[in-house]
Length: 99
Image (cartoon, rainbow, N blue to C red; front, side, top):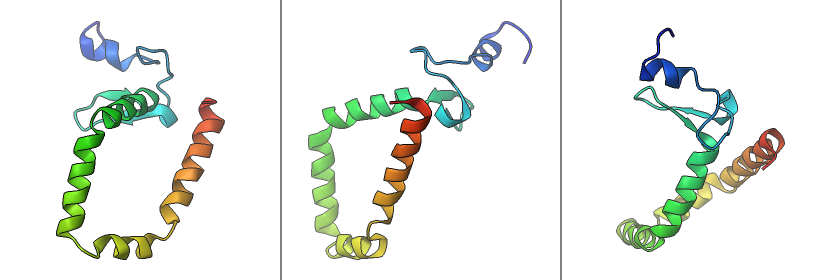
């Protein structure tokens, strides 16, 4: 991209504001065309979840009350597949970023 406008400046960035590399493995491409660092996004979401834990628990309890038996059905369907997938992704992230 040519020029000195905001779009050109942001497109040329190779690292986020905190210095994390904006490589394929650490990059989120948003629908609006912006880029975000996965490492910073994870840190933001950890803080957001911590601040909103009470709201999240209320929502989950309400959902479970409205959908009796659904959680048991989902647990039976997925039976550890998600845990294996997340463990694999965490291991890959550790190897790649050393975090």
